[in-house]
Amino acid sequence: MPREQKRLRACGRRVREFGVPYPLIPETHLAAPPDPTRGLRLLEIVRRRLRERRYSKRTEEAYVHWIRRFIRFHGRRHPKDMAEPEVTAFLSALAVEEGVAQSTQKQALSALVFLYDRVLARPLRELDRLAPARSTTFVPTVLSEREIRAVLAHLAAVPRLCAEVMYGSGLRITECVALRVKDIDFDRLTIVVRSGKGGKDRRTPLGERCAQVLRVHLARGRERFDDDMRRDIRTTSLSDALMRKFPNADRDWRWRFVFSSVRTFVDAAGIRRRHHLDESVLQRAIPVAALAAGLTKRVTCHTFRHSFATHLLESGVDLRRVQLVLGHTDVRTTMRYTHVADLGAGVRSPGDRL
Image (cartoon, rainbow, N blue to C red; front, top):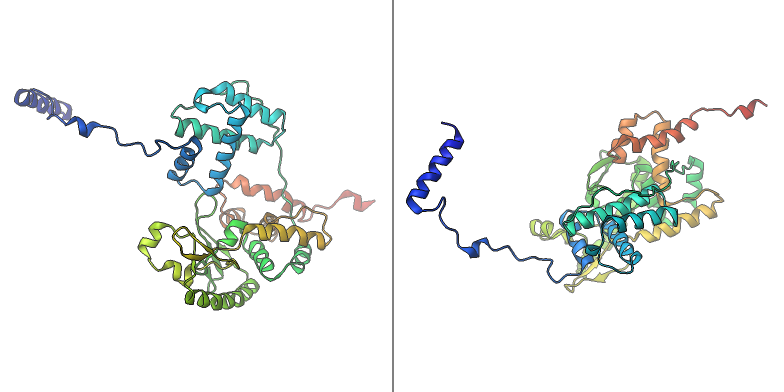
């Protein structure tokens, strides 16, 4: 007998026995669960929704920024009182009046799509008459090996080591400062990047020369760690779930940041902790070192990652391997380095024949 007929026959027996298809359920059991966002402001709800979906902190900050700008652009009107025309007007103003890049306009659009879809439960329809931002082709700034040596020579000890790790392993600045002791494998000369961009883990090579300097740096860091343990100064950025599984992780050397901060702070629970090195330390030091080295290029922390990828391609490493080491989801992101690598791999200017 087909399943549907069995179900209807069983339903008929319930009607004969109870007078209803199924036993009655108390109305209290059917009441909707309490809304945890009741009483919260709009941007607080946005942050909660983003954290529920495990968005990164930077994405959270960017989305909140664009939603706040959208509200201010329309005279602080609530987004529930606005719709597609207001969204189109805001995004078009970004492109026409402010001249933002296409990627910036896309980020603002993603923030507003999330707002209306996940927070207001009113998905946006197609945006007609949207003025698109100007599309640009990004060519990354790449340093030669001589230029990298010149920049490193004008950096202090810790920023210099961070720059060597970013160049030697292709790390982003956030991945570099958040490295923990357990993520460095000296025997296999690899670094495990935890929760990189997009929440992905990956392995990347560690240079032998950099490994030697890191060993010395960690030996000094172990002395500071032992002193911190005597004063009960713990490490940070460990989730509640991890602390339930490993209650002493914040006192464990393996979970210590490789590049720990000089200063400590007291958290909300009254526990003194030591965070990792602040990104702004490197963001200030590296451009200053580039100027001191006499470079005219715009050098940032990310320039070392661009140089890492380009030099790998120039040395003959397969594009797919470079993609895996960099952690790119789409190979087209990695292919932008081929333009720089091909130009530097032997394309000779016809002006040399004059």
